[in-house]
Image 1 (cartoon, helix red, strand yellow):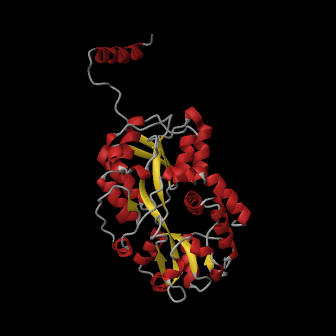
Image 2 (cartoon, one colour; image 1 turned 135 degrees about the vertical axis):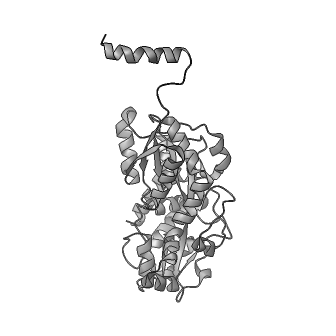
Image 3 (cartoon, helix red, strand yellow; image 1 turned 180 degrees about the horizontal axis):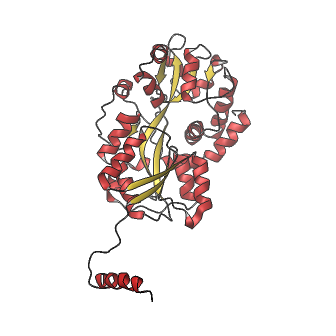
Length: 344
């Protein structure tokens, strides 16, 4: 046996046999695969590292790309936590056997049942509402009190929207399937296509800019894109907010559809302790306040104080109580209905 190797090994074995503290330190790094693409998240990750001393190694990408990468890497994957901005992707990862259950009293106590998997394989940490944007000069809010109203023939040529393949629209259609059934959902998707002012393109902010430019009168958007524009100092954004308003649909029925940002610990995570610590951190008061005050999302933990004038200006609203995992089950059907309707 090599002498230098023996001199290192013997004290180690003695220390372990005497019950002394392990010479191997606790996890000091975390490998994060994230589909969140917000620059402001740097403050979130720094907060975790400052609080724990754990370094975050981050790989960012699109949801499906990261999902496939984790499956391809298998047991050799270095990833500890997978974060995404869509409940359906989280549930799909769960059903594919990618996650490990997280045993955490803190997470179970702080994350409401609506925003976590039934089997505790993943947890949501913030949510966003899918709202209707409208031209204040041409549309009355009562005309579009529900998502289904957007499919009315009266709005032919008045709607701008992003791709039907995008998770934001697919999960909305999945919620309509859950509440209204497949037939009504199919009619709605076809109605949206019939009412388009232009072919689907761009992101949510682009749809609101199109309303301000007079290209259309109605659009679907996540609420935080509107909040960002409302906080902007740019003249064009201020002008947009003067023209464009938003509506929280279905307040007299099931409530407005919401989707989540969330994550789970991966089955082959090499740093499981760090993974649990990170997920618990995302449920902490500091991180929950960040989601609201730093990125205009709503925190999932009840009773959190929000110090964000733009969010406060939107007021309170009734959210759809549908468990996030239920949405994933209808995504394949939602995609087929989108394709059949021609919502590309």
